[in-house]
Amino acid sequence: MSLYVLGLNHHTAPVDIREKVAFPNDRQRSALEDLVKVALAAEAVLVSTCNRTELYLRGDEAMLSRAEAWLQSTPNAANLNLAPHLYKLKDEAATRHAFRVAAGLDSMVLGEPQILGQVRQAVKVAAEAGTLGGPLDRLFQDTFQAAKHIRTDTEIGAASVSMAAAALKLAQQLFGDMREVRLLLIGVGEMISLAATHFSAQSLKNIVVANRTLSRAKELAAAFDTPSCPATAISLSEVSDRIHEFDAVITSTASSLPIIGKGMVEPALRLRKRKPMFFVDLAVPRDIEAAVGDMDDIFLYTLDSLGKIIQQNMATREAALVSAEEIVNTHVQQYQQWLTGRGTVPAIQQLRSRADQYRNAELERAQKMLARGDNPRIVLELLAQGLTNKFLHHPMTALKRVSGDQHTALAAALEQLYPPPAADQTEER
Image 1 (cartoon, helix red, strand yellow):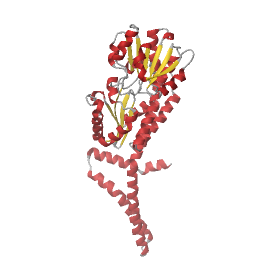
Image 2 (image 1 turned 30 degrees about the horizontal axis):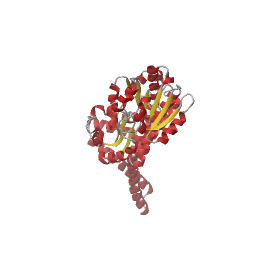
Image 3 (image 1 turned 120 degrees about the vertical axis):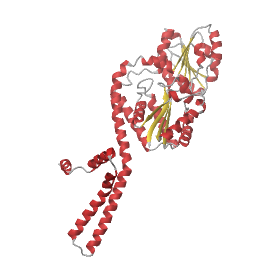
Image 4 (image 1 turned 90 degrees about the horizontal axis):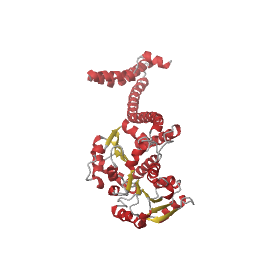
């Protein structure tokens, strides 16, 4: 049984593909249960974020093929060809990938900390769904330790440029003086909170937070409401009537359908007398229709376009990346050793059971000989000879049955298991 990773991410697929195979939080458990049933996987963990959808699986190659067919058949992906965008990793390569993902080394924002929490949540969901077993659980617990090690002992996250920071940089290029900018934030998740942190520090004209649940919007707005940057809240249903009031709109919701389209933006532009509008869509699936970006006086940025800007700031983290990869290598080898050791347990148990059978049989024979008065010295010699014959019978028979490379490999294995006396003496000294 092998470990596999099947997935796609920002390296292999654009956002319009990624959004089709993104699994909302409330669907992940049922998706896992269905996946295990269809693919016949021994274990499964689903990691689904705005930048990646990955299946971590334990099983055989036939299972992997069934898992790929399952992913392709999900409702939003049924009309797509996912194959060119998918990667498949096995065993050590899959293990290494898991460590790099959890540490933020495979993220669009190198070293970003959010992915670790997302992977932790994915493991929790798998445990609740009953699809998490010993090997995968151990793998991810080890990745969490490695991620902590990397964050503590390297500077991988010190110069991290977040999506929110990149969005602010673009807004500053467009507007120059940010003090007259009116900002609409749609959603109340972590990405929006980060955006609020960066933009509120610029003393904007005002910030308005919109959300389906008004109380949560009010809570976030209150956290950033200051005299230098007032913040208020509205319900999501008010956005269409008020969007023309804002110079900048940043959105990141869990909506399965776009919430802003041309039909909403066109009248807003007319009311603004064609004054430019700045949009940032941090959601997957996207909150803003792609066609909005084709309109005059509209500046629309998605996760992918922000990612290109972030890559320009990679140089300062290259040295830290080398150290982080060394830590990953160490942890990967430790996990592989644990996995190998775990795999030898049944063989060791079988070997010990066979040895106990030999010992008991020869001991019973010796006890009978002693009971009838046979010479103890002869009994001991026969006991030793009987044990020797039994232990050597199967190895010698196997060695005689094979030839060529198999014979060479088996002979080498036997020499390692039963080293010459000189080697034994050297080890004892």
